[in-house]
Image 1: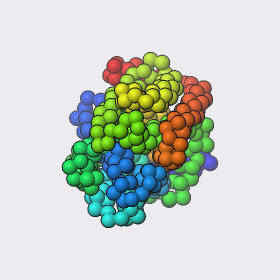
Image 2: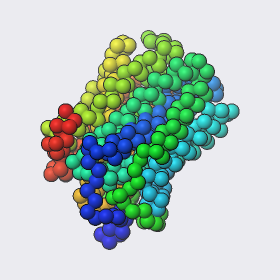
Image 3: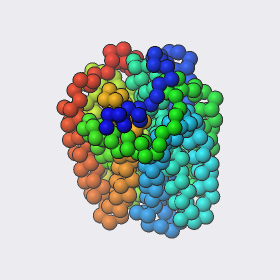
Length: 425
């Protein structure tokens, strides 16, 4: 088994390569390019979330059915992640990330003119396959191309880019849809994705810590499936599954809740997503906190904050909902930043392929989004907000239990370097 794992570990072009250091021009190019990529990736994935009520009315489907526009994308991303590993090994991380954004932008434009609900779901399903390329390769690329002391900072910057994308994907669609319907929102977000793909073509430097080589799909799939055989990787994946499920489930259902009594916000409901940008600072804050109290304890604290947020959003007062949405975004993105760095760090320390461990984490992460996102809208449709809140709190309990267990099983690397704490403070 060790030999099989070794064969799946990325081949190094230059064993002495230490990686790009923070402050260098190439490091800045990497950070800018991947932040732009994360922004585009997440905005294209999630821009439908605040528009679910509008899409339900446009296509004549129920609230529960409308959630499939997001769930089909996160479901096919899981399948795409399985192919991302061998493809990135064969053609390189950079090529996969570039073409991921360019192909996604084209599919996004096509979805903007989808004439029927089945056609839209088909295009959103294909979109998931292409969107998988960027997150599937980005974490491994950062681990291989950025030096050790600078990696936590670069990883936090990338996650911050996805946070900006999440904010844009929830704030821009409302005003754009008010002008030209949801197709205009889809078209604008897709054009942003194409622009990000072009930016990656121009800015992202080629890999120096990894040499492209053919890897059989069977070997890569085995590597992805074997990654959770490590107890810590499995527990980190469980935290990601539950935390992502709670986050997406709440965000899916709250769009409908704000249309109903006692809020009755109508088109103004999109304004509550102004709370989302609060989460942009979360990755940097989470890394600084991890430098002081440890990564595992910081993850556990983030999950606890996630649970508090669900309770706050459940109050029948608009200020509480807005504050809760800001808090849940901050808690989730900070937690995800730490988890995504933890899983590839653990894989590297135990001799497992970082790309396969990253794919395992992201696969369970998006599985949580798919299942909980669809379940939350069904619970809202059948029983109101109480069912959504119970689901969110139950997932938070699972995440907290797994986070505590992971911390106990992996105590040695919990502290982030002191230099990183200074850089992120």
